[in-house]
Image (cartoon, rainbow, N blue to C red):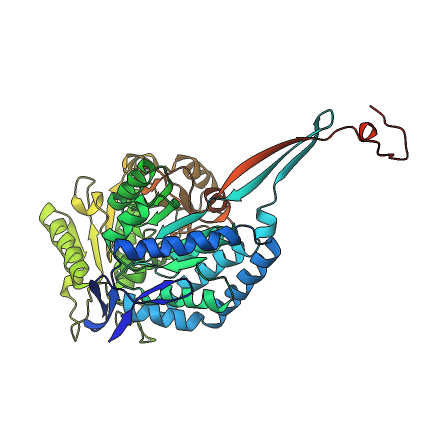
Length: 495
């Protein structure tokens, strides 16, 4: 039985809280480990370690920070498969999905390696006679990240590389459901040569989260998870005088116009709805079929669903793995029943598919003729369920997105450039895809939704991430005329 503790001051710190949680292999349903749940005192120890480290790390040269970040990046690349296997073992996603997650994390690491360029300030010479004004960006101090179970490696790499590259010290609180991958990343971080305490990891539950939010030495909190918790973290952190960014849930729509490439749209719907068992905040949850393309599109999706191979993530043939827990599986299955009870057409019922063993598997479901008052439309299901809503026009579909309280991502499939251009203006979402179902930005842009999908003034990673983890300092300087100090410049002054 694997026992996962904390990492504080560069070394494993055994928990004395007396509390722990189970870690499962979702493909078998077996408990494979336990994870320590931190006490307030253990969180305080991690923050104290980070505070001590920041005193020196905040003044380390950009050249040194860059070298260490490059060394860390190279170690993550070297051990990418090791990280992916840990993801699959505790989250359940198939290895190809896990490798993709690690690759997107490395993309953000590589952005952090360019910190010397990204942190360059601004300089105005001779703003007034003999006066120069310049702006520099300074680190905040100790910052914290609270990350979700669905991307236990990628989302931490959205946070701590940028924060540390900016000169901060970081305390990571990963999900207690699949903690091995982020802990392994922290161990590689130490191997790269970063000073102890620059990155600390405390595993835990609400007790640890609340202590990080209220701790007076924590200057900022980053969060990714569900909307109710994002609201709570943002409100609590800001009430305690901290910067906060809370990335919340989603109900992402994909509008398919009658002129769309049917095969492209159907392929995209299946991969975006059912990849990683639908446990993605950028998953497509709703397909809006416009006009007479609806019947053809639903049939094309159904045919592709029949070919989808569901099985253990370690099996190379598997295209979708289990859900994270038995409770998650049962909750998602309940939404399928709720949709049927509300009157939608259950084209494919994932509950009908049988699986051997005790893993947390659920088949994929397709619901047609869903209406906007049904719970399968209004709620973030976070599982392999795709709803199809029929619309008479593009305008009706665009209005659905505007009326939805979430605003993470939205996509359109069309051959019409004018319609696509109009959609990128109309879509009330922070990330928009044109014939791209999951428009997650590359690492040198920034990730973040609108409305109830994000809370705070800064989105995450990329340029916005750097702004979140630093604060500007503006310096106005005037030097005496050298002639008054007896310094001979060797040429006459020209005032």
